[in-house]
Length: 70
Ligand SMILES: [Zn+2]
Ligand SMILES: [Zn+2]
Image (cartoon, rainbow, N blue to C red):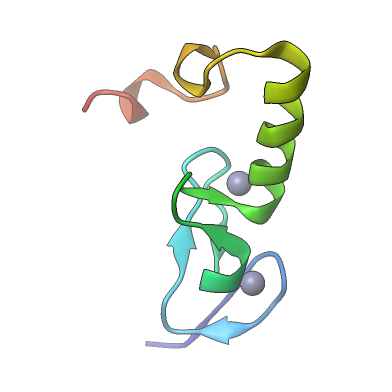
């Protein structure tokens, strides 16, 4: 197994986290575990929330239906 690279900062690490919105594989430093979002989506989400004031769960985001069935 090759070490994988964080798709945001390029850091090589064995442990990568998948963003639940864009699917990027990112390192712990670039991942917000509480939101399960990468740094980029996390920052976007914060801005969107402030502008639209819509709860995360109510957003018709670009999440395909197969990802929601939980
Ligand atoms: Zn990173
Ligand atoms: Zn993301």
